[in-house]
Image 1 (cartoon, one colour):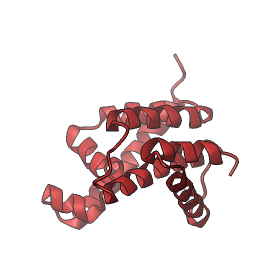
Image 2 (cartoon, rainbow, N blue to C red):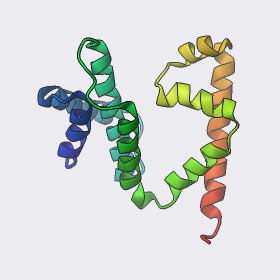
Image 3 (cartoon, rainbow, N blue to C red):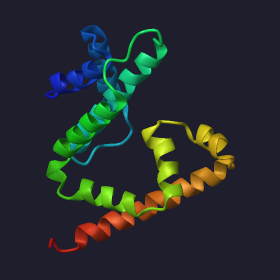
Image 4 (spheres, rainbow, N blue to C red):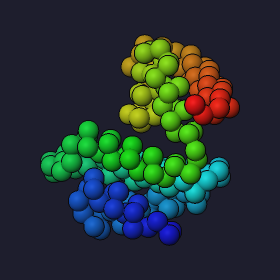
Length: 161
């Protein structure tokens, strides 16, 4: 709640409507309180809140297709990256390690992660888009999660140089 203005502002940047931004903030706060997981740091929670507010704002805009989109998608992504960097700054090099590990993945793996997490498609939709079985998508995502976790841990264990 101490970051209410910032999360509301993140939503407002997308929807450009104060009342809708407040509704989005309330939805994000409710989701955060009802999530079955705990965030390890305040930065992780804040990063999640910014991303969730942005996505809810984009969903709101999609439901209102006749209204113009004020900000370009590229600008929104840049803002999200800057907020994530700021929010995760106290997590050391973890966000940079994740970026490095993502860059090292094969293009097909990055595409799968992009479809699922950045584009926000459900696993069923991703499976349909890729012409794959649902269980294969779940297995690939699970292997990617494990590989990214191991890669990040390895990079964080390396001495800074």
